[in-house]
Length: 141
Image (cartoon, rainbow, N blue to C red; front, top):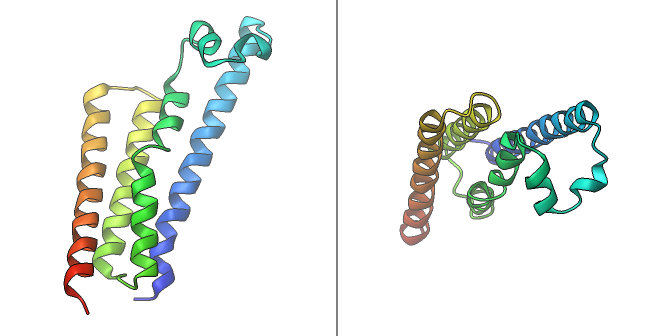
């Protein structure tokens, strides 16, 4: 397997972050215009929470900088340590798909149990990736 293929899921996660950021920005601007609110009135997180009621996209944007950070590190460890394989590539794409599903659910219907299943799937896949990394680092010479 070509080593750089494992980096494409990182790029896909970047595109997911950009898509959620664009959704957040579009919704925020529409909210400001519709309610005639000057952006300065939401300069702090407290002011934002008191003013804006639809926090689905901003909540998801923050989520993309929590657990996914462990995914970014895992993929970089795989790449740098030369552990890349088809199994890692498939797991990385499954992780990205689960996170994309999580983002879509949270930014649209926000059905908590559906969002939980996507989150649980992504965490399970990420755990498997890290266990495989640990195993390979411990056993491969």
